[in-house]
Image (spheres, rainbow, N blue to C red):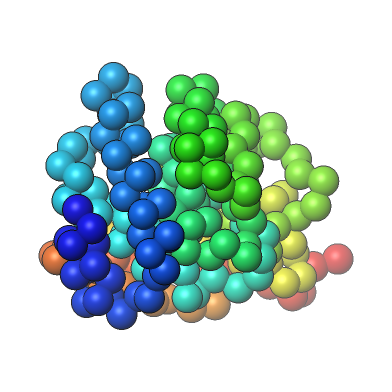
Length: 211
């Protein structure tokens, strides 16, 4: 699996340490084990996981601004846990409402000795952090409008951003953005060996609505 990971990283021009690569492989091994019982993902082949889960997650790392992030609806840690591996100087809160997913993330945290993640079991509308985040990340919400309505209380209104991982560019969702939200950037992402489209949508609260 290490050889395949090295190939994918080389194509994507992502440089990681050997320790980071080993942590990614260990994560995939744990995910495969737990997946047999809990079916966290429909992807079962470890090499396919490297493409559809690992590279699909870490490819957004260069676009994140700040040091404190929350991954909403993280599931088995996608993309937040993998981003925590490649961005060790940043902190990621991994939020999910399903207990078995949080149990898995805590096992990964312990096994990989990750000190920059905090798995939390909660519904997003019930979670109120003591300090707002530099970035709210999600690839689980059905629409941008839903993501924003559920997560607006989590982001630093002055400097923070919403990062939505999408497949095909969601033009109809972008046209339906609320007036207090500004589209900051759209990045078309290239995932090695993945034919499907991927986009990162970066949104901010309009300065006119910041009080």
